[in-house]
Length: 490
Ligand code: NAD
Image 1 (tube, rainbow, N blue to C red):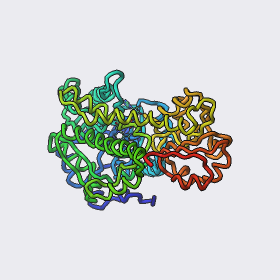
Image 2: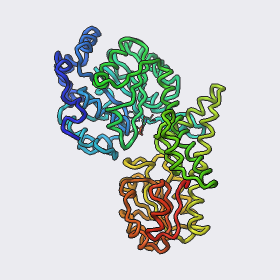
Image 3: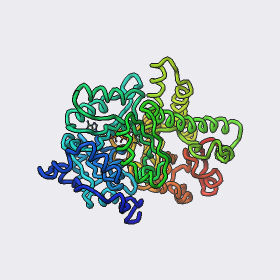
């Protein structure tokens, strides 16, 4: 990445002009009385005038996980003053020391640049970060609620209440977390109840970034969705996203409910597309077709498109599993079952389990006592995120079946160590293959895409390859000396 990164760092003069003293990192957290009086108590007219001139906005980001951290860093790169807040003291300590707690390509350099420029800081002090902010983003987790599949809104509502207690002047409280329809209205009510005299708006701004390509997705989005209910909130949100607007990325203003629904509909659609090709892959195996050829032939149709048509071991990750479940639950709650989504959830579970059968069959009907080297455990490459990764279904089944499992992943061991007990972590695919009975490619990290298959096969006790990402072909494997090879849908 070049020093000027995405070109937002050096903002146009028009935007820079008329800028009030920046809220520095120190000012945001410690703030001298003078700085507070200048930056934290601006009247609406002043704010509107600043927006008209293209002012740096003051942003508090509540929740500094994958989405909050990337969004906070990118907003600061737009030129805004951003304070990222998290309850997790250890995480904030690491961030303050310049360390990025997650693996996301390019993030560390972008973060360092904006911290050095005084536009980005980290704190556990929500009240200090929120006071005087033009917008407060809620980017906390919305995991699946235990037992019923609903999105767990505990963290969102707790954050809303903390924000209400801390705000002293107008701000837009923006939900970036993925939340069911109606949540933004509930956030509004909660803030209104806690702070009846407070002037504020709520806005919905669902996030579409993909882990592993998060910065590029944030900086060059297909679209930005903004659910707003007032012109003032629209102006603040418009100003925050001005650099993207100037570069003509589509900004879609809509109502709160539609914004909330867009996120679920988009994720459920993508999960459906993946599951569709995975199911077609099953049939390809039965009838002798090659799913890669089929996907290519389908994807060349402009109405279909070639993305999300790669057959594999089933979708996982921090979003699709929980968001499909939450959408299904929303449908049930409104007596409008989401039958397609409900089926997708079931088929995806079956596909993950089917991978266990594939590996077992490859090993001659049982993995008991077999040495199995699994390459890749994160739910996709270029992330350390293990949430709902297919490995969490497949690896325990192999261990339970009596296999001696060796795992290799460039980034997965830190999270994976606690989640995948009874395995042996190794740092190199060839070492893991030493005297192994089977190698399984589960996540297509680059280093597993370019394996020397001959070398790999030579090291193994019995050269068998389960290529669950269709990286190689049966021909490649045979030529390299593998005596058995399976993939998905071919
Ligand atoms: P995460 O679990 O990585 O991060 C959430 C953070 O919020 C944690 O660090 C937690 O300590 C912090 N937190 C919780 N309550 C807090 C509070 N009251 N004050 C301060 N900090 C608090 O979650 P994530 O993956 O970043 O996801 C956040 C939201 O964004 C979810 O709703 C998710 O569905 C959505 N989303 C995620 C992705 C993705 O790829 N991860 C993409 C798009 C949307």
